[in-house]
Amino acid sequence: MLSASTTGNRQLVYQIIGFDRLNFVDDVANAVPQDDQCRITGLSFVVNGVRVDGQLTVWVQDDNQLARIYRQLSAIQGLVSVRQSD
Image (cartoon, rainbow, N blue to C red):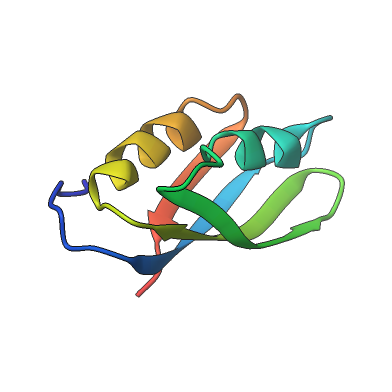
């Protein structure tokens, strides 16, 4: 799980796997609040008709946003896994 702290500005990459369905990628993008504390800086997905493999890069001003983003991503219908990349 993610730990909450307040370390300042940084970029984080999530690896996402899910089942292909209409609006899956939209749901991933909408899970990240677009405000002055966090924003999407990269979004890339490969779809084969059954499986979706993707990478979501976010910039956060405050690490407390990470737990919120993780919860939102985890709640997406059809999501198989979400993890932070090193």
